Image (tube, rainbow, N blue to C red; front, side):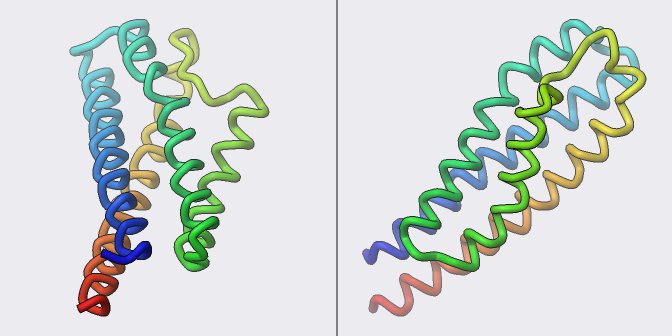
Length: 136
């Protein structure tokens, strides 16, 4: 198996994990909308995944950069920059006192990231299969 196939296999696995995390976010935000969960419980559950998600996304982008996968790097850089901006401004965590006021914004961000991770997953899967076919 070539290095390119290994990099994209890693991307497929990480992409699947990030997809799972975003689906979890969407489910919990929907539960808050229909009062199945209280705001404090929601923020406690979601905040434990916010920084690890951002770190994994940045790490995966750096792996693509080091391995010379320029298209994958360029695809991921805007999200890494957006996440870095949120962390630098201190707006990356969910706040229980502000959650109802900012719920629409959080929901929109979750759906956009879910779509991004879904497209990324299929792109990484395609590139992995392409690298495996070219190896043989």
